[in-house]
Image 1 (cartoon, rainbow, N blue to C red):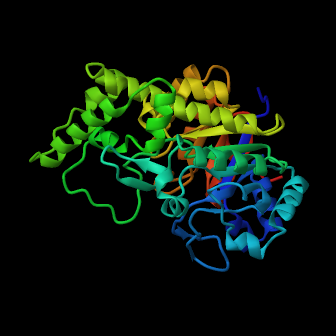
Image 2 (image 1 turned 90 degrees about the vertical axis):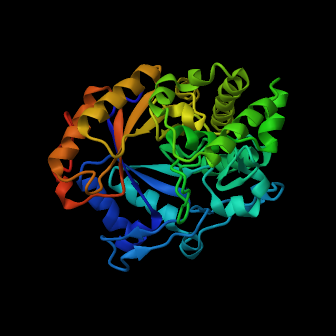
Length: 398
Protein backbone atom coordinates (compact mmCIF):
# COMPACT_ATOMS: atom_id res chain seq x y z
CA UNK A 1 0.00 0.00 0.00
CA UNK A 2 1.28 3.41 -0.93
CA UNK A 3 1.36 5.50 2.27
CA UNK A 4 1.79 8.85 0.54
CA UNK A 5 -1.49 10.47 -0.38
CA UNK A 6 -1.63 10.76 -4.16
CA UNK A 7 -3.00 13.86 -5.93
CA UNK A 8 -2.87 13.82 -9.71
CA UNK A 9 -4.32 15.79 -12.62
CA UNK A 10 -5.76 14.22 -15.76
CA UNK A 11 -4.58 16.30 -18.69
CA UNK A 12 -3.46 16.14 -22.31
CA UNK A 13 -0.23 16.63 -24.24
CA UNK A 14 -1.80 19.44 -26.27
CA UNK A 15 -2.60 21.32 -23.06
CA UNK A 16 1.01 21.18 -21.90
CA UNK A 17 2.35 22.13 -25.32
CA UNK A 18 -0.03 25.09 -25.64
CA UNK A 19 0.78 26.45 -22.18
CA UNK A 20 4.41 25.31 -22.21
CA UNK A 21 5.58 22.06 -20.62
CA UNK A 22 7.86 23.74 -18.08
CA UNK A 23 5.35 26.43 -17.16
CA UNK A 24 2.49 23.93 -16.82
CA UNK A 25 4.48 21.52 -14.64
CA UNK A 26 5.59 24.39 -12.41
CA UNK A 27 2.03 25.59 -11.99
CA UNK A 28 0.71 22.08 -11.28
CA UNK A 29 3.41 21.51 -8.66
CA UNK A 30 2.67 24.89 -7.06
CA UNK A 31 -0.94 23.78 -6.37
CA UNK A 32 0.29 20.95 -4.16
CA UNK A 33 -0.52 18.14 -6.58
CA UNK A 34 1.92 15.24 -6.54
CA UNK A 35 1.45 13.96 -10.08
CA UNK A 36 0.18 14.37 -13.61
CA UNK A 37 -1.88 11.75 -15.44
CA UNK A 38 -1.06 12.32 -19.10
CA UNK A 39 -2.89 10.87 -22.07
CA UNK A 40 -1.05 8.06 -23.87
CA UNK A 41 -3.97 7.04 -26.11
CA UNK A 42 -7.23 8.83 -26.68
CA UNK A 43 -10.43 9.15 -28.67
CA UNK A 44 -12.10 11.94 -30.62
CA UNK A 45 -13.74 14.89 -28.91
CA UNK A 46 -14.35 18.60 -28.87
CA UNK A 47 -12.72 20.57 -26.08
CA UNK A 48 -13.04 24.15 -24.99
CA UNK A 49 -9.52 25.34 -24.10
CA UNK A 50 -9.97 28.33 -21.74
CA UNK A 51 -6.32 28.22 -20.61
CA UNK A 52 -4.70 27.86 -24.04
CA UNK A 53 -3.00 30.97 -25.43
CA UNK A 54 -3.09 29.41 -28.90
CA UNK A 55 -6.71 28.30 -29.43
CA UNK A 56 -10.00 28.01 -27.63
CA UNK A 57 -11.48 24.90 -29.28
CA UNK A 58 -9.59 21.69 -30.03
CA UNK A 59 -10.58 18.50 -31.85
CA UNK A 60 -8.17 15.65 -31.03
CA UNK A 61 -7.59 12.95 -33.61
CA UNK A 62 -9.62 9.81 -33.06
CA UNK A 63 -8.12 6.58 -31.77
CA UNK A 64 -4.46 7.55 -31.87
CA UNK A 65 -1.48 6.92 -29.60
CA UNK A 66 0.24 9.86 -27.94
CA UNK A 67 3.61 8.24 -27.45
CA UNK A 68 6.30 7.20 -29.97
CA UNK A 69 5.47 3.51 -30.09
CA UNK A 70 7.90 0.96 -31.50
CA UNK A 71 6.45 0.02 -34.88
CA UNK A 72 8.41 -3.22 -35.06
CA UNK A 73 6.42 -4.59 -32.09
CA UNK A 74 3.15 -4.36 -34.04
CA UNK A 75 4.23 -5.66 -37.45
CA UNK A 76 3.02 -9.19 -36.79
CA UNK A 77 -0.31 -7.93 -35.40
CA UNK A 78 -3.49 -7.59 -37.40
CA UNK A 79 -4.45 -4.37 -35.58
CA UNK A 80 -1.96 -1.58 -36.13
CA UNK A 81 -1.88 1.67 -34.11
CA UNK A 82 -1.68 5.20 -35.50
CA UNK A 83 0.44 7.96 -34.02
CA UNK A 84 -1.14 11.31 -33.21
CA UNK A 85 0.27 14.03 -35.46
CA UNK A 86 1.02 16.07 -32.34
CA UNK A 87 3.54 13.46 -31.23
CA UNK A 88 4.99 13.03 -34.71
CA UNK A 89 5.59 16.78 -34.77
CA UNK A 90 6.99 16.84 -31.21
CA UNK A 91 8.98 13.59 -30.86
CA UNK A 92 10.76 14.82 -27.73
CA UNK A 93 7.51 15.56 -25.86
CA UNK A 94 7.84 12.75 -23.33
CA UNK A 95 11.51 13.39 -22.64
CA UNK A 96 10.67 17.01 -21.89
CA UNK A 97 7.61 16.08 -19.85
CA UNK A 98 9.45 13.59 -17.63
CA UNK A 99 12.35 16.01 -17.20
CA UNK A 100 10.06 18.89 -16.17
CA UNK A 101 8.01 16.66 -13.89
CA UNK A 102 11.09 15.39 -12.08
CA UNK A 103 12.39 18.94 -11.70
CA UNK A 104 9.18 19.95 -9.95
CA UNK A 105 8.78 16.80 -7.86
CA UNK A 106 5.87 15.35 -9.84
CA UNK A 107 5.17 11.77 -10.87
CA UNK A 108 3.75 11.03 -14.30
CA UNK A 109 1.11 8.37 -14.86
CA UNK A 110 -0.06 7.20 -18.28
CA UNK A 111 -3.79 7.82 -18.75
CA UNK A 112 -4.55 5.08 -21.28
CA UNK A 113 -7.83 4.67 -23.15
CA UNK A 114 -8.08 0.98 -23.99
CA UNK A 115 -11.12 -0.44 -25.80
CA UNK A 116 -12.82 2.84 -26.73
CA UNK A 117 -11.44 3.32 -30.23
CA UNK A 118 -13.82 4.22 -33.05
CA UNK A 119 -10.97 4.56 -35.56
CA UNK A 120 -9.88 0.96 -35.04
CA UNK A 121 -13.48 -0.21 -34.76
CA UNK A 122 -14.24 1.19 -38.21
CA UNK A 123 -11.08 -0.32 -39.65
CA UNK A 124 -11.65 -3.72 -38.03
CA UNK A 125 -15.43 -4.03 -37.52
CA UNK A 126 -15.22 -7.74 -36.77
CA UNK A 127 -13.28 -6.90 -33.59
CA UNK A 128 -16.04 -4.74 -32.11
CA UNK A 129 -18.85 -5.42 -29.65
CA UNK A 130 -21.97 -6.66 -31.45
CA UNK A 131 -25.46 -6.70 -29.97
CA UNK A 132 -27.97 -9.56 -30.14
CA UNK A 133 -28.82 -8.60 -33.72
CA UNK A 134 -25.18 -8.51 -34.81
CA UNK A 135 -25.02 -4.69 -35.07
CA UNK A 136 -21.47 -3.44 -34.49
CA UNK A 137 -20.70 -0.78 -31.86
CA UNK A 138 -17.72 0.72 -33.61
CA UNK A 139 -16.58 2.73 -30.59
CA UNK A 140 -16.02 -0.39 -28.44
CA UNK A 141 -13.44 -3.04 -29.26
CA UNK A 142 -14.55 -6.36 -27.77
CA UNK A 143 -12.41 -7.68 -24.90
CA UNK A 144 -13.09 -11.25 -26.06
CA UNK A 145 -11.45 -10.72 -29.44
CA UNK A 146 -7.95 -12.23 -29.65
CA UNK A 147 -6.65 -9.55 -32.04
CA UNK A 148 -7.83 -6.87 -29.60
CA UNK A 149 -6.25 -8.63 -26.64
CA UNK A 150 -2.94 -9.01 -28.48
CA UNK A 151 -3.02 -5.34 -29.49
CA UNK A 152 -3.70 -4.29 -25.90
CA UNK A 153 -0.92 -6.42 -24.36
CA UNK A 154 1.53 -5.16 -26.99
CA UNK A 155 0.60 -1.54 -26.32
CA UNK A 156 0.90 -1.94 -22.53
CA UNK A 157 4.28 -3.64 -22.85
CA UNK A 158 5.38 -0.80 -25.13
CA UNK A 159 4.22 1.83 -22.63
CA UNK A 160 5.89 0.06 -19.72
CA UNK A 161 9.37 0.99 -20.98
CA UNK A 162 8.66 4.57 -19.85
CA UNK A 163 9.15 5.51 -16.17
CA UNK A 164 5.45 5.95 -15.42
CA UNK A 165 4.34 5.83 -11.82
CA UNK A 166 1.24 4.00 -13.02
CA UNK A 167 -0.83 3.23 -16.09
CA UNK A 168 -4.46 4.22 -15.58
CA UNK A 169 -6.62 1.99 -17.77
CA UNK A 170 -9.82 3.60 -19.02
CA UNK A 171 -12.57 1.70 -20.92
CA UNK A 172 -11.08 -1.73 -20.24
CA UNK A 173 -14.58 -3.21 -20.33
CA UNK A 174 -17.79 -3.58 -22.33
CA UNK A 175 -18.80 0.07 -22.71
CA UNK A 176 -22.48 -0.34 -23.45
CA UNK A 177 -25.14 1.16 -25.68
CA UNK A 178 -25.60 4.38 -23.62
CA UNK A 179 -22.10 5.60 -24.47
CA UNK A 180 -22.43 8.79 -26.48
CA UNK A 181 -21.45 8.71 -30.14
CA UNK A 182 -22.71 11.42 -32.48
CA UNK A 183 -26.25 12.85 -32.66
CA UNK A 184 -27.83 9.83 -30.96
CA UNK A 185 -31.48 8.98 -31.67
CA UNK A 186 -33.69 6.23 -30.26
CA UNK A 187 -37.27 7.55 -30.22
CA UNK A 188 -38.81 4.79 -28.10
CA UNK A 189 -37.84 5.95 -24.61
CA UNK A 190 -35.22 3.44 -23.57
CA UNK A 191 -35.12 2.43 -19.92
CA UNK A 192 -31.90 1.55 -18.06
CA UNK A 193 -32.71 -2.13 -18.54
CA UNK A 194 -33.38 -1.59 -22.26
CA UNK A 195 -30.01 0.08 -22.69
CA UNK A 196 -28.34 -2.76 -20.83
CA UNK A 197 -29.92 -5.39 -23.08
CA UNK A 198 -28.78 -3.44 -26.13
CA UNK A 199 -25.28 -3.39 -24.64
CA UNK A 200 -24.79 -7.15 -24.41
CA UNK A 201 -22.24 -8.56 -26.84
CA UNK A 202 -22.82 -11.73 -28.83
CA UNK A 203 -20.03 -11.33 -31.38
CA UNK A 204 -18.25 -14.34 -32.83
CA UNK A 205 -15.32 -13.78 -30.48
CA UNK A 206 -17.60 -13.90 -27.41
CA UNK A 207 -19.26 -17.07 -28.70
CA UNK A 208 -15.91 -18.71 -29.37
CA UNK A 209 -14.43 -17.73 -26.02
CA UNK A 210 -17.56 -18.77 -24.13
CA UNK A 211 -17.55 -22.14 -25.90
CA UNK A 212 -13.91 -22.61 -24.91
CA UNK A 213 -14.99 -21.91 -21.33
CA UNK A 214 -17.75 -24.52 -21.57
CA UNK A 215 -20.69 -22.16 -22.13
CA UNK A 216 -23.04 -21.91 -25.12
CA UNK A 217 -24.38 -18.35 -25.22
CA UNK A 218 -26.70 -18.88 -28.21
CA UNK A 219 -29.65 -19.41 -25.87
CA UNK A 220 -28.96 -16.15 -24.07
CA UNK A 221 -28.74 -14.37 -27.40
CA UNK A 222 -32.15 -15.71 -28.48
CA UNK A 223 -33.78 -14.59 -25.23
CA UNK A 224 -32.19 -11.14 -25.31
CA UNK A 225 -33.12 -10.67 -28.93
CA UNK A 226 -36.72 -11.55 -28.10
CA UNK A 227 -36.78 -8.92 -25.36
CA UNK A 228 -35.36 -6.35 -27.78
CA UNK A 229 -38.03 -7.25 -30.34
CA UNK A 230 -40.66 -6.53 -27.68
CA UNK A 231 -39.24 -3.13 -26.74
CA UNK A 232 -39.19 -2.12 -30.40
CA UNK A 233 -42.89 -2.96 -30.74
CA UNK A 234 -44.30 -1.47 -27.53
CA UNK A 235 -46.35 1.69 -27.50
CA UNK A 236 -44.82 3.25 -24.36
CA UNK A 237 -41.76 2.53 -22.21
CA UNK A 238 -42.26 -0.04 -19.46
CA UNK A 239 -39.81 0.53 -16.67
CA UNK A 240 -38.72 -1.99 -14.07
CA UNK A 241 -35.44 -0.18 -13.49
CA UNK A 242 -35.65 0.07 -9.71
CA UNK A 243 -35.84 -3.71 -9.24
CA UNK A 244 -33.42 -4.28 -12.10
CA UNK A 245 -30.72 -2.14 -10.48
CA UNK A 246 -31.45 -3.47 -6.98
CA UNK A 247 -31.21 -7.15 -7.93
CA UNK A 248 -28.40 -6.94 -10.49
CA UNK A 249 -27.62 -10.21 -12.23
CA UNK A 250 -30.08 -11.86 -9.84
CA UNK A 251 -32.84 -10.13 -11.83
CA UNK A 252 -32.28 -12.74 -14.54
CA UNK A 253 -32.22 -15.88 -12.37
CA UNK A 254 -35.46 -17.11 -13.97
CA UNK A 255 -33.52 -17.14 -17.24
CA UNK A 256 -30.46 -19.25 -16.40
CA UNK A 257 -28.99 -18.96 -19.90
CA UNK A 258 -28.87 -15.19 -19.52
CA UNK A 259 -27.67 -15.22 -15.90
CA UNK A 260 -24.87 -17.68 -16.72
CA UNK A 261 -23.85 -15.54 -19.70
CA UNK A 262 -23.71 -12.39 -17.56
CA UNK A 263 -21.53 -14.08 -14.94
CA UNK A 264 -19.22 -15.39 -17.67
CA UNK A 265 -19.07 -11.92 -19.30
CA UNK A 266 -17.27 -10.52 -16.26
CA UNK A 267 -14.54 -13.15 -16.52
CA UNK A 268 -13.60 -11.77 -19.95
CA UNK A 269 -12.74 -8.34 -18.54
CA UNK A 270 -10.94 -9.79 -15.51
CA UNK A 271 -8.82 -12.11 -17.65
CA UNK A 272 -7.81 -9.27 -19.99
CA UNK A 273 -6.81 -7.17 -16.98
CA UNK A 274 -4.71 -10.11 -15.81
CA UNK A 275 -3.03 -10.43 -19.22
CA UNK A 276 -2.08 -6.76 -19.11
CA UNK A 277 -0.74 -7.07 -15.59
CA UNK A 278 1.51 -9.91 -16.75
CA UNK A 279 3.33 -7.77 -19.34
CA UNK A 280 3.97 -4.77 -17.08
CA UNK A 281 6.99 -4.70 -14.73
CA UNK A 282 6.43 -4.46 -10.98
CA UNK A 283 7.71 -0.87 -10.86
CA UNK A 284 4.67 0.25 -12.90
CA UNK A 285 1.33 0.08 -11.14
CA UNK A 286 -1.84 -0.73 -13.05
CA UNK A 287 -4.96 1.20 -12.05
CA UNK A 288 -8.38 0.30 -13.39
CA UNK A 289 -10.64 3.31 -14.05
CA UNK A 290 -14.19 2.44 -12.99
CA UNK A 291 -17.09 4.68 -13.93
CA UNK A 292 -19.33 2.56 -11.71
CA UNK A 293 -19.25 1.43 -8.09
CA UNK A 294 -19.36 -2.27 -7.08
CA UNK A 295 -23.16 -2.40 -6.93
CA UNK A 296 -23.49 -1.42 -10.59
CA UNK A 297 -20.16 -2.25 -12.28
CA UNK A 298 -21.72 -5.50 -13.57
CA UNK A 299 -23.53 -3.34 -16.14
CA UNK A 300 -20.16 -2.99 -17.92
CA UNK A 301 -19.15 -6.60 -17.38
CA UNK A 302 -16.88 -5.66 -14.47
CA UNK A 303 -16.55 -7.80 -11.36
CA UNK A 304 -15.25 -5.08 -9.04
CA UNK A 305 -13.84 -7.47 -6.44
CA UNK A 306 -12.07 -9.62 -9.04
CA UNK A 307 -10.61 -6.53 -10.73
CA UNK A 308 -9.35 -5.29 -7.35
CA UNK A 309 -7.42 -8.52 -6.91
CA UNK A 310 -5.86 -8.38 -10.40
CA UNK A 311 -4.88 -4.69 -10.48
CA UNK A 312 -2.75 -2.58 -8.14
CA UNK A 313 -5.57 -0.13 -7.64
CA UNK A 314 -8.90 1.22 -8.82
CA UNK A 315 -9.85 4.82 -9.61
CA UNK A 316 -13.56 5.26 -8.89
CA UNK A 317 -14.92 8.16 -10.93
CA UNK A 318 -17.39 10.02 -8.69
CA UNK A 319 -18.90 12.33 -11.29
CA UNK A 320 -22.14 14.34 -11.39
CA UNK A 321 -22.86 13.98 -7.71
CA UNK A 322 -22.61 15.79 -4.39
CA UNK A 323 -20.27 15.34 -1.46
CA UNK A 324 -22.43 12.91 0.51
CA UNK A 325 -22.83 10.45 -2.41
CA UNK A 326 -19.07 10.70 -3.05
CA UNK A 327 -18.49 9.48 0.49
CA UNK A 328 -21.08 6.72 0.09
CA UNK A 329 -19.63 5.55 -3.22
CA UNK A 330 -16.08 5.48 -1.91
CA UNK A 331 -17.08 3.68 1.30
CA UNK A 332 -18.86 1.01 -0.76
CA UNK A 333 -15.87 0.71 -3.07
CA UNK A 334 -13.51 0.40 -0.10
CA UNK A 335 -15.50 -2.55 1.26
CA UNK A 336 -15.13 -4.37 -2.06
CA UNK A 337 -11.54 -3.37 -2.87
CA UNK A 338 -9.87 -5.99 -0.63
CA UNK A 339 -7.11 -3.69 0.57
CA UNK A 340 -5.94 -2.62 -2.88
CA UNK A 341 -5.22 1.06 -3.51
CA UNK A 342 -8.38 3.03 -4.09
CA UNK A 343 -8.52 6.50 -5.63
CA UNK A 344 -11.28 9.03 -6.16
CA UNK A 345 -11.77 10.58 -9.59
CA UNK A 346 -13.33 14.06 -9.41
CA UNK A 347 -14.18 16.53 -12.15
CA UNK A 348 -13.40 20.17 -11.38
CA UNK A 349 -16.07 21.30 -13.84
CA UNK A 350 -18.74 23.96 -13.44
CA UNK A 351 -21.54 23.45 -12.47
CA UNK A 352 -20.45 20.09 -11.04
CA UNK A 353 -18.15 22.09 -8.78
CA UNK A 354 -19.37 25.65 -8.17
CA UNK A 355 -16.55 26.74 -5.91
CA UNK A 356 -13.73 25.82 -3.59
CA UNK A 357 -15.92 24.73 -0.68
CA UNK A 358 -17.86 22.25 -2.81
CA UNK A 359 -14.62 20.65 -3.92
CA UNK A 360 -13.31 20.61 -0.33
CA UNK A 361 -16.49 18.81 0.76
CA UNK A 362 -16.09 16.12 -1.89
CA UNK A 363 -12.41 15.62 -1.13
CA UNK A 364 -13.13 15.43 2.59
CA UNK A 365 -15.95 12.91 2.11
CA UNK A 366 -13.70 10.65 0.07
CA UNK A 367 -10.88 10.98 2.59
CA UNK A 368 -13.16 9.91 5.43
CA UNK A 369 -14.27 6.91 3.36
CA UNK A 370 -10.70 5.67 3.07
CA UNK A 371 -9.46 6.88 -0.30
CA UNK A 372 -5.72 6.63 -1.03
CA UNK A 373 -5.73 9.72 -3.21
CA UNK A 374 -7.40 11.70 -5.94
CA UNK A 375 -7.24 12.29 -9.65
CA UNK A 376 -8.77 15.59 -10.75
CA UNK A 377 -10.16 15.93 -14.21
CA UNK A 378 -8.71 18.53 -16.56
CA UNK A 379 -8.74 21.67 -14.49
CA UNK A 380 -6.46 23.61 -12.21
CA UNK A 381 -8.20 26.99 -12.08
CA UNK A 382 -7.31 29.70 -9.56
CA UNK A 383 -10.48 28.94 -7.54
CA UNK A 384 -8.91 25.70 -6.22
CA UNK A 385 -5.87 27.39 -4.66
CA UNK A 386 -5.61 26.74 -0.94
CA UNK A 387 -7.86 23.66 -0.91
CA UNK A 388 -7.51 21.83 2.41
CA UNK A 389 -7.67 18.06 1.84
CA UNK A 390 -7.14 17.07 5.43
CA UNK A 391 -3.47 16.52 6.10
CA UNK A 392 -2.32 17.86 2.75
CA UNK A 393 -2.70 21.27 1.20
CA UNK A 394 -3.88 21.02 -2.39
CA UNK A 395 -3.33 24.42 -3.84
CA UNK A 396 -0.90 25.75 -1.30
CA UNK A 397 1.70 27.98 -2.90
CA UNK A 398 5.22 26.96 -2.05
